[in-house]
Length: 182
Image 1 (cartoon, rainbow, N blue to C red):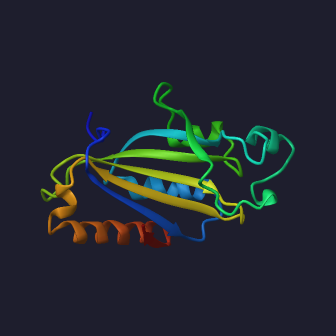
Image 2 (image 1 turned 180 degrees about the vertical axis):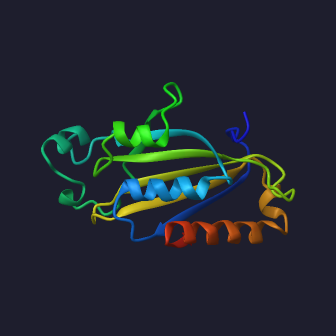
C-alpha cells in the first residue's frame, strides 16, 4: 500500500510541533484540510483517547466527573493519548469524525495522509504524514505532525533539507504558526 511504512525498517522520520493561535479543533482541521489539498492524499482519521489509568482512575471516570488533565496538574496533553479507533472500517471523512467524536480534554484527533512521490522526482518514494490535534492542559489547542519515509536515503539526499524547509514554511503559513522541528 502506498505510504505504508514497514515496521522495523530504518527510514526517515521528522516530528514537527506547531505553535499557533487557533481557537478550536475545527479551525485546525480546516487549516489542515486546506494545507493537505494537492499535497497529500487522505487515508483515515483516528480518535485519540486517554485509555490508561491516570492517578488511579480511568480517563472516562475523570471525564464523567468533569475533571480535566489540567485539574490533575498534568503538564503535557499528548502523552496519554493513544490511537483507539481508526475510521478505516467506516471510512469517515474528517468532517464526519469531528461531528461524531467529542474532541476535548481527554479525546484528540489523528489524521493520516499518504505523501505521494515528489512532482520533481524528489522524494522518489511514497511517504506518510500523520497529524495530531488535541486540547492541552493549558486550554490551548495543540498540533503536531510526523513525516515518515520508509528509506533513510530520503534524508541523505542533498535535496532533503530544502524539501523539508519548504514543507515546514508552507505549513507555517497554512496554520499561521511557528514550527519547532524535533
